[in-house]
Amino acid sequence: MLLKNTSTRFGHVSVLIHWLVALAVYGMFALGLWMVTLSYYDTWYHQAPELHKSIGSLIFFVMVIRIIWRFISPPPKPLTSYSHLTRISSKLAHFTLYLALFGILGSGYLISTADGQPISVFGWFDIPATLSEQGVQADTAGIIHLYLAWVVVVLSLLHTLAALKHHFIDRDSTLKRIFGFNPD
Image 1 (cartoon, rainbow, N blue to C red):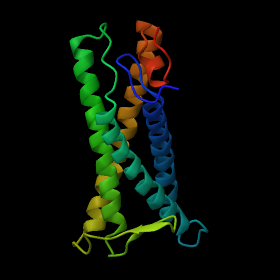
Image 2 (image 1 turned 30 degrees about the vertical axis):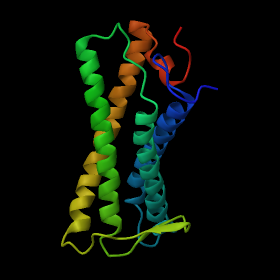
Image 3 (image 1 turned 90 degrees about the vertical axis):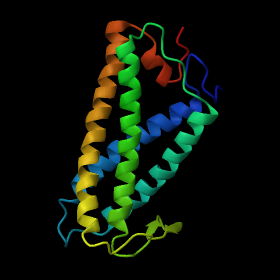
C-alpha cells in the first residue's frame, strides 16, 4: 500500500482525501440547495442546517489535514507532456479551489455563529462563536457562501473535464494518477 505520494503518482492518503472532499462538497452543495427550500413546518427544517454545519466543520478539519499532508507528501511532478499553459492553469485552478473551499467554510462559520451560538458537530464537540453580532454578518456571509459554492462547483466541473480530456484525448496518465494507479 502506497501511503505517500511519489514523483509520478498520488499515494492512498492523497487519493482518499481528494475523493472524500469531492464527494462531501457535492453532497453539501445538494444539501444546501435543498435545505433553503424547506418550510418552517418541514421535519428537516431544523435538522438539515445542523447536519450541514456538522459536515462542513468536518470538511474544514479534513482540508487542514490536506494542506499539512501536501507539505509532508508533496504531489507528483507535472507530466513532461504538459504545456507551460497547462502547468500554470493547473496551479491556478488548484489554488482557486483551495481558496474558495476555505472561503465557503469560513463564511459558513460566520453564518452559523452570527447569533453568538457555537456550532455543535454531531453533538461530539462544539466550535465556539468568536465573531458574532457584527450587524449583517449572517446575510453578508450567506451571499459569499452561496457564490463561492457555485464557484467551487463550476471550477470542479472544469477540473473534471480537464482530467477527462487528458485521459481520452491526450491519452496521458493524469486521471490514473489521482485514482492512485501506477501511471505506467
